[in-house]
Image (cartoon, rainbow, N blue to C red; front, side):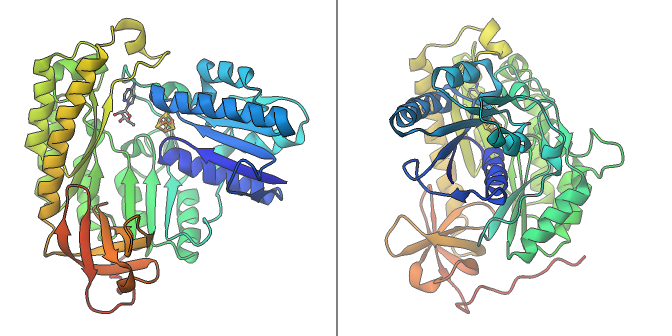
Amino acid sequence: MRAHIITYGCQMNEYDSHLVASELVSLGWELVDSVEEADFVLVNTCAVRGKPVEKVRSLLGQLRKEKERRGLLIGMMGCLAQLDEGQQMAKKFGVDILLGPGALTSLPEALKQNARFWDLTFREDVLDYIPPPPKGALSAHVTIIRGCNHHCTYCIVPTTRGPEVSRHPDLILKEIELLKQAGVVEVTLLGQNVNSYGKDQPGFPSFAELLRMVGGMGIPRVRFLTSHPVNFTDDIIQAIAETPAICRYIHLPVQSGSDRVLRRMAREYRRAHYLDRIRKIREMLPDAVLSTDIIVGFPGETEEDFQETLSLYDEVGYDQAYMFIYSPRPGTPAYKHFQDLPREVKVERLMRLIEKQKEWSYRRNLEWVGKTVEVLVRGEAKEEGFVQGHDRGNHPVLIPAAQAPVPGLYQVEIKQATPHLLFGEVVGAREPAPIPLPVA
Ligand code: 5AD
Ligand code: SF4
């Protein structure tokens, strides 16, 4: 029996797809790379914006046809599955198995039943499940906390993923130890809001403490996603500063530079607080690479509000930004209470923001020319004759293929920069560079 998994959305979803893939393998299923080869197609969905929802709709349409043609088991999981919108779709397109983001461990049971199986509960054993290391991977994700306790008015995630629940630190450390033994050199700790780690469970370490613990395990690179500005506290910045294994790459979504918009978004901080966190990061981690998420065209955003986002961008000088046009999501407070702006206004603002992002990314990238960085080479690049990897600051780096014939960590001197890419050459030995292990 052969299964194919299709994943939309964020790294949390990638992790969850790996989790269900390992469940399937342990049940004796073979994983295949295409719908055509599969008896079971499982779609891991995202509901954060309209676009991923529409992609799922058209995919499910195709799968229904395939099902009518030759018989096929169709599964749907992830954030959209948790919503009414997704469940309507599932009914329409003949989805057999539907699992919300908290019900992934129901998959074996679902496959046993010869009837439609839907589970939208949040099961505790999802937190306990330790998926085996992904085969041959140098880089892996580890979920440390699930859910979200915030109530940003634009966001559907608190509805789809429920409240914050931290995983037991022993499980996290065990999972990372297995990854290390399997040869993984980079671990990314995942959560909707990693800084909240431990707060929901008495006796659990704080996020700063967890960072120090993971940073001392001998994994060369430890990263984390995503942080919330409201509780990106000094002790976290201190832990990063004191733990060499932790990458100094900080993704701190700001969403808007205008206090008026931040208030309407129900973000629990204001511009001054955000900039104070950036100041502290720059003071304690002068080489930190900063990225952010920004939503343009939130309902009621005026030209003045947008100018404040542009000026905040200049004040921070981000290395990278993920920029989104506001997308009204049914079920969110903003959808219910606010009027969406005309599309032309939103698109035009996005274009201006992208211009700003390109300017800053180019400027920041140029600062790396002449410096030597550690690159985790993953494999062939799209550009012929190059391999691609990323440095500790998450910059994509291209290297002549002959210089890095096998994936791994290399010391690379940056020779050239574009707004999107760094180009470098391996310095010294052609072997993966020796890795300085952090002192425990
Ligand atoms: N519209 C546009 N962007 C959104 N995001 C979350 N909800 C919406 C929405 N309704 C963005 C935020 C968040 C990122 C994961 O997606 O910027 O940080
Ligand atoms: Fe990830 Fe959010 Fe999309 Fe869910 S809705 S998959 S948490 S980005």
